[in-house]
Length: 303
Ligand code: NAI
Image (cartoon, rainbow, N blue to C red; front, side, top):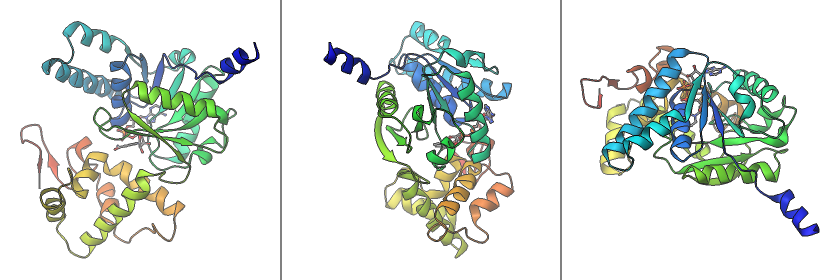
């Protein structure tokens, strides 16, 4: 009896329904991946247009699966039907887990997380897909920090295997176990990491972006840097192209968070090209213009 009680206590909470808050590049991708792997998902945003884009992205990815004969048309329709786009908070009441994926701004995220926590079930898990913001800082205004942790996917979600599960100081073992299990169910390879600005991957990636920015400020041609990194060094994307894929608005906000967290190592540069792009509203692929220009007619990027 004692053993059974202990097993029940330590059993991993099953995630059978999920919600994403924010239907952008990441929210749309996370919703698609969750639905594809059999976990129905509510996709919540504040803008109708964003929901339309999120659904269009998911449908496009599913159509590709059908083209490649990995999915039949009937299953595709079933997967699409398991994503529920909404502007309302009502559907959040019954989900097992929420992945917050709104803009990378501590204040906005703090307010959204607080609001969502007040709506979801007492034992539901709350996570943030933040790229850089400390999980402990985001947990500060929550009433159930034990149910909260980071769940950081990478872009594009359907292709990148890694998910960082970030444990805050109050995150319970049960929460970590449930989020790891959900990531695995989504076909991902989760790693559990401690909390700090940038976590694991972005502590490696953002100094690399800073190195790129310094090169550009020293006079290097960004396209030349990409060419060397891609063609000669063999990486799938050079830094300028990667920044366009990430979104220069998101990269700008992340750079701020990293500079706050590591004032010496990641000090902001004067005339940083990422800031310049952001201020000129060149956000990258998402609005067709970043370091490169993107158009539906031209294949890929043009300088
Ligand atoms: P995005 O700009 O494409 O999408 C953000 C979405 O959030 C928009 O659709 C916006 O309408 C919505 N939104 C804003 N405020 C909201 C609110 N109060 N309630 C509901 N929805 C709201 O941004 P993206 O790139 O998807 O980034 C989202 C998060 O994911 C950020 O924290 C970012 O750092 C993180 N992330 C981004 C990656 C990338 O490569 N873009 C990679 C990994 C994480």
